[in-house]
Image 1: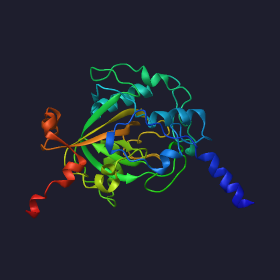
Image 2: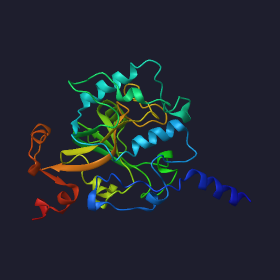
Image 3: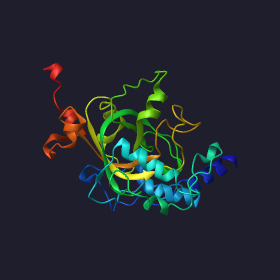
Image 4: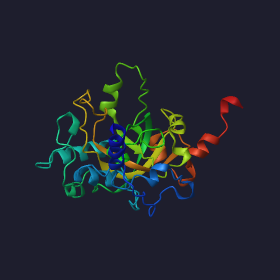
Length: 280
């Protein structure tokens, strides 16, 4: 009987909906994983309505051109705009905070920052460095599933090389002050966006990460140099989530890459296949 109850509970958590492929940023490189046939756009069927709305935003592959550039300055200012919205509460529901709000329309009607307007669901890109690569855990957005093919890949992005090491006592302080998050979701994820490939990019080349701008209202930014309990170390809850594309710059500086022609950018796969000059 206990086993039957567990199986029934699992069936409730995992949506039987197929993940929609109407919008597919990966083109012919997409890979259909088992989670694409068991977990839909809204994630877990037993999640709250507020969580389902947020999960739809986190699974949004339909953001359209033109892409707007975001910088760390832009994202800091956007965080300030959100925190100034009256009665907009958010945070880790499992740590005694309100969780994602039921109403998200205010995230599409924020005042301009950095001379431009930004809203949740916009297509954006960031040029900088991948500071950290690690798998996520089970979440409502992934219907509570586990295993490397079923969870997000969490990227910490920064405007400078932070060289964060796993046992660095200053790790959280560095990430809190300088990094924000991008998430490569499991749905339709091509091989070149697997964690093993992306770890090779850590603290090395300048990258361009393109995807949908999303506000993760299930967490809060760091309290100065310390992350809150259960929250990632980052200065903002604005994310690039989901990631549509990661490109590698052939040049060496962010300034040079920002004005680079399309010929100066290559895919992760192309970058991985280039000969190592140290081995020639």
